[in-house]
Length: 247
Image (tube, rainbow, N blue to C red; front, side, top):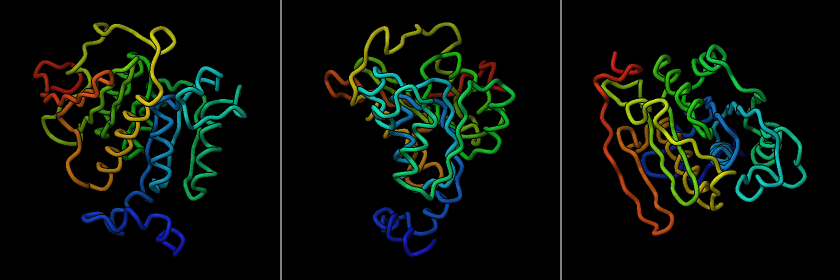
C-alpha cells in the first residue's frame, strides 16, 4: 500500500483485529455482485469505499426513473444507461483504485460458474428466485461463500452461506424451488432505506468473510421487520436431504 491508500483506509486499519494485513486482503480480493439495483447499490459502493480491489458487477437492466428512489449508485444523469456502466462511473469517482468489470447480460450457468471460480465471495443482490437458486448451486459447486440478501415492502433478510466449510446449509435448505411467492418491488412497493440497511449488512458480511473479522452470519438468518424495527435471528441447519449441498 502507498501513502494515499494508508490514509484512505486509515479508519478501518486502526480497528482492533483488522490492521494492514486485513486491508491488504481486501485490496487483493475479487467479489462478484449479481444485481446492481436496490441491494447491489449500497453493496457496490461500500465495498469500493472499503477498498475491495476487484468488483465484478452483473446486471442486464438499464437505469429507469423509478429506480432512483432507492438505487443510490445511479443518478438522474444515468437514465437509460446500463446499470453496470452507471455503477462503474459512480465507483470510479468514489475510489479510482478499484478495478470494476461490468457484465450487462444475464449469465448462463456456465458463465456464472466461470465467474464464481475466479471470485473470493459471491453477492446475491438479485430480485428473483430463479437467479438465487442458480447462484446457490454455483456457490456450492465452486465452494465459494455466498452473501445473500432480500428486501420487499418493509421486510428484509440477510444471511451468509459457507460451502467452503463443513456441514453448512445452503439457500436450497431454506427455500425449496417453486415454493416461494414471487414478489417484486414494482408489484408491491418498497421503502427506500430498507434496501440500504440490508445492502449495508451484506457489504459488512463480505468484508468479514474476506478478512476473517469477527463472526459472520453463516448458519444464521437475520430478519428485519421495518414497521416495528425489530430484528430476529434464526439458526439455519443443513437439510440432510438437500439435493444441492447434502452430498
